[in-house]
Amino acid sequence: TVGAYKYKISERSEVIFAGVKNKKTTKVSIPQTVKIGGKNFKVTSIADGALKKTKIVSVSIGNNVKLIGNSAFENCSRLTKVTAGTSTFKIGKNAFKNCKKLKNINIKSTKLRIVGANALKGVWANAKIKVPAKKLKTYKKLLKGKGQGKKVKIIK
Image (cartoon, rainbow, N blue to C red; front, side, top):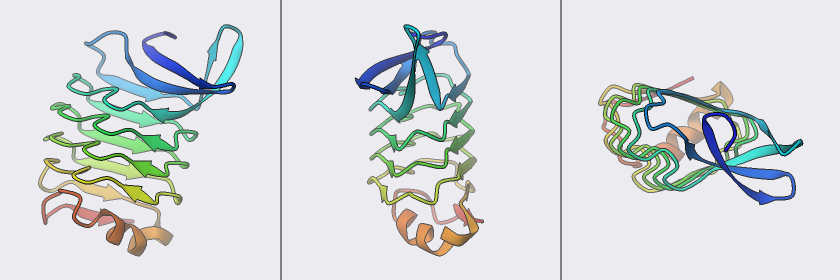
């Protein structure tokens, strides 16, 4: 545990964001690096179910995070805004399932290749997913049929 967040060490210089210490935490900012025991570690992924059913309102994901785990934010009924960093490669299945108030998703990464089934099921009906301009066409295909409603817009 470092500050308000929990981590799991996965490799020599990498850790996995595992959740929050206090269930009442509303804003989460997952850092690019974290210092544990005097050593710096890159935060490279978010564990499966890390913030499932928590009271978070907004999440900012650091640029070193490559993987958002399965059900990482599932049933976060108050979540309204998510910003994914520049290295995000995979969004796991059910990642944002039933986040009924999730209106804004900002994906800064140009490396996104995998989006799991039902990753966006149950998000706000008129949600906006902002993606890099040069990846708009690719991401529209990639994000199609991931559970979101027909009114959800993917914009640049």
